Each structure stands twice: as structure tokens, then as C-alpha cells.
Length: 381
Ligand code: MG
Image (cartoon, rainbow, N blue to C red; front, side, top):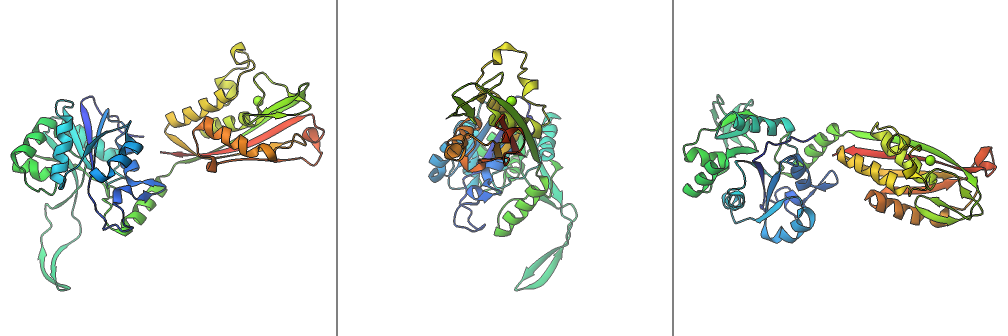
């Protein structure tokens, strides 16, 4: 789930830094975290905002346009964090009442943290930002030795998103063009009171190589993985071809069915509905409805795939097994996987189509029809 932001609230994500302390030679916000760039996770956390401004380094602009062009407003960053934020804020001027400014390198910001900042601003705060009280003792050190202790009373670890009434933070940036550590520092310099909201340990800022390991561990424990299975059978009838997984295969019989009788695609569609606990094809496309007579089963599969996406799931993989003595599936399996991949919008490497006979046993063995089983795995985004 993502937080649905009120109208007038915008998100500004800063990703213009060149931070390479996290290792691997490329800026941390573009590095892989659980199969996708860090920034993908960060942007997704704010997908409930009508407007997202993403500030990127000019060198990354082409790449950012390719990856996020339709979803966010892209702004080229400048040579300091404060200047980059200022560029993003300027792009929002007159377009929003409030803005939440967030580090691109904090990909795991929990919904509750975002919601807390929004609530404080809705309650009338001009500025609100999440933080956690410091619980460890604080020492000053030099040369590997403790030189002093520091009282931790009242100390907090600052996080983002830091939220502001847009005109307030714009004015603070313009009046105090200092190289601030964050926007709260600028707001304070401008005399703005900043409310502290609840931060979260999971809202880590990826800085060092170990942070990737920790972030992946957090993502894994949060992962909602769903499996669905589907099974279908269609009987042979007179004809000269069958349609299997969207591919026309010449045969000395056809398949009997209300739609195009694509038994493989039906099994896969039911697997996706099953993973979503959304019934089966018959529930969404009743056979009693004449409009589905002779229908291309791609309609059903596309519907299931869209439903999965609408409910916030990504299809991780699909595996279809066709069970028949004939026709031979092997020569067509790659074309079938290709067709399924087009319909589902999923890479072919995540789709398997294979076949088996039933050793001449049972109805498939007697060549009375074709059966199919399918499994689909869905991952909550
Ligand atoms: Mg069927």
C-alpha cells in the first residue's frame, strides 16, 4: 500500500548526489536493491502523490527520462544538495500547497512515516519532519580513544521526508542560501517552527555498502509473495488447428469451447486470479454471456494481469504445462512464451511453457482432449 496524499501535496525526491561511498562505482540511488534501482523503491513509496518532482544529476537525466519520464517531473540538480532542492522547489512554485522533501537514498520509508508528516502539516504545522530519539550513549573520540561523553537528552536522529508549506520553504531557501545539511536547518534559520514526527528504524539512508545488505533484509521480511494455480481441460472436436497459449498450432482436430478454447491460457489466467483470490475466468467472463463466444483468450489473460497490477502486485513468473499426446508442443513453446509475455507485459525469461504426455493413460492419453496446469507467482510491490 502507499499513502494517498491529499490534494495539493507534492513530493520532491533528491537524487542528484554522486555518493559512491556505498561502493560499486555508481551512485547509490541507481544501484540495484532487490532487483531494481534504489530509486524505484523510493519513487514507489510516494506513488500516492499527484505530483512527484525528481531531482537528478544532469549526467543521469537521459537515463531518468527513459525510466521515469511519464511518472515524475524531472529537474536537473545543481552542485549542492541545497541548490538541487531549490531547483526542485522552483519547479513546484504555484503548483502545490505543501511539499515533502525526501532523500532518494531512503528507499524503505514506511507509509506511517509519510502519513505522520502529512498529518502534522494538515494540523497546521508550517514544517514537520520525522526523527528518532538517540538511545545510544554519545562519545566524542580522537585517535581511537574516547575524549569526552556528550549528553543525549533531547537529541534526535533526523530523517526524511521533511514536510513544509511550499511558500515557507521556498522563502527559506531564497533568504538563506546556505549549504545546509537539510531543509529543517534552513527552516530554522528562517525562524520557522518545525514539528517532530515519528521516524522509523527501517527508514535508513543508504550510505555504506552494508546498508544494501540491511535494506534487502528489511525488504525480504516485508515481502508479500502469492502463488496461484490453474487447471483447465478442453475436449477435441472437429477442426484443423488448436490455439494454445495464443499460438495457432495445426492439428487434425480442434478444441471445443465457448471462447477460442485456449486451454493453456485459461489455466494461466486462473492461476493469476487464484493468487489474487479473485475467483476464476468464469467469474469475470461468464460463459453465459454471448459476447465471449469465440473470444480471443488474450482478453482474459490481459484482464488478470492488469488486475494484479491494479492491486499492487508484480507477476514474478509463470509456468504452464500442457498435457497431451498431440500435437507436439516443443517446436511452438518459444513462440507461446513470447505471446504470453506480450499479453502480460512480462519478460520472456520469466515465462515457461512446457508439455508432457500422460503416457497414453486417461482422457489425454486417449487423445480425447488437452489439459493444462499453470502456476503464477505474484509479489506485492
Ligand atoms: Mg477453459
